[in-house]
Length: 571
Image (cartoon, rainbow, N blue to C red):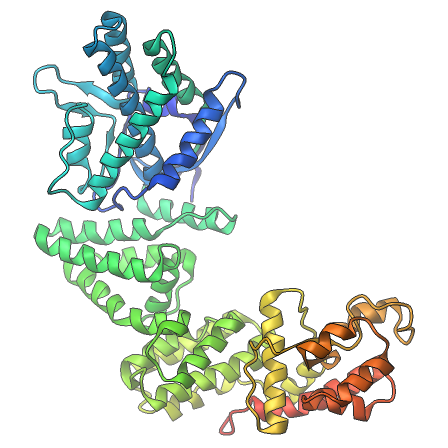
């Protein structure tokens, strides 16, 4: 992104709105959605800023704008904040209008009203009472904003969209708060003007201005990489619907499509939607990185039919994607749900494009799809959890297989699983990696992974299934995480290296585990011998003491068992 296509600066609300520029929320951007919790948070911040001796400035976050002429700016991100601040200004104007109507310093307050309106809202034609607005809302909200809110007239309540009711409620909420704020002041008109002027000088944004949608998308990617949570979903929607609108799709048809879009976003979540879109795209096309996704879509989707097809295909894949990301709510078989939940616990998403492609051919409710899910769990455990191999290599293989499914080159699940062979670490490599594996259970996800591993080992040894999330047992670190001096068999360096080795951990009944703590090996050995868990009993039986060498030997034995458990025989 060249410097000429990108500009960033800090601007106060006064500089943004008082400079003769106009701001336009794109036609298909999300409707106004803030509610009372959002209003209250902002109002509390404003009150803290404008009070005497209050904060000299309050940061409002990023504002992402797009403009080709530096006069009219499309608001790509920040529309909820800009709209709400405009409603606060209108609430102050409404209170000034009341003072004028009550003949309280009418000339002074009329001047204040006109000056504030022209600075922050726009010029109001004295004949038509239509506004030459500084802020233009989206297609669903602008009519109500310009025709009812800006003129400060009566606000009708029937026959409007939920978001238009939201605008009205926000205005009325701030109207009451502003009235309370100046209540009791000797000169309320002056206090109202001071509120708006001080607020406008002390609220500031980091304003990022770009020249087109592609640069805007790159801004989203950059800021997200730095931990700033922005959504590119609206940008993607605005582009696709602009393509449809540009070819004359009927408004009712657009409304149906928009409802479908919002339904998908609602089910997936606004922040998860771009991840879903990339997964969907990679299940049907060549592999694309997240940073190149918007550029690729913009290059491929240029006509009405292509946009329709993309929306239909996304809608087709949502159910399977939700089955993978929210397995507890799906309608799959118990085994498929369990496999999907295991992938989620592993935090592994690389197989998703392949699974989406397979679900379209083999049916996600079938036993064939269940077999593929199971194979992906085993490969993910060997490749990702234990082996820590490169995820990028894995993505390419899954993408290639997804394309082959789409071209009808793979006619059975068995052929698909065979195609995964290059991602399946050989037994010798897996065994070697497992033998040395450490997993720090101080992290909650890692703790669940260790419970899963130990439960699977227990099931393998005793042929009894264990719910690894059960509260009946815990992970026991044989060498304690903070060992006292009677663990002298381990040096300080060895304590650090050995505590989180898989060979140093067993499952133990919660009641027994609670009383063990950091007790020395003989006390633990005695408790382990009475445990129902096979691994704990084996550790007690096979070891007269507990040393670095005994941990290594025990973990090597565990690796042999693991190789037999996490195995795809045909690979």
